[in-house]
Image (cartoon, rainbow, N blue to C red):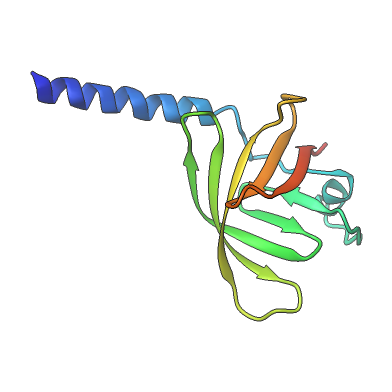
Length: 125
């Protein structure tokens, strides 16, 4: 009986984790103004560019490809990536956290594993 309760509790916890991440849908790109312009295939240079898709995170100085995604109990999404910085050879592993903005639920906030904020992005049109 105790084993059954443990299994049932873990199934409920896993389902809750997936349900909370369902609110962060990256099937359509998110970005700031210059990031969304670049999502349409244009190559516009802007110091503040941020573009987040279901496969990658691109800034003016780096390009990161996601190798893992994990929904968190608080509704955030942890993205593990391999990133290449402009002017450097090779890739480095980096982890990002994406969560809803406290100021505007339609926007997402992107931070690195140290908590440094990259900024807020909105769904591109």
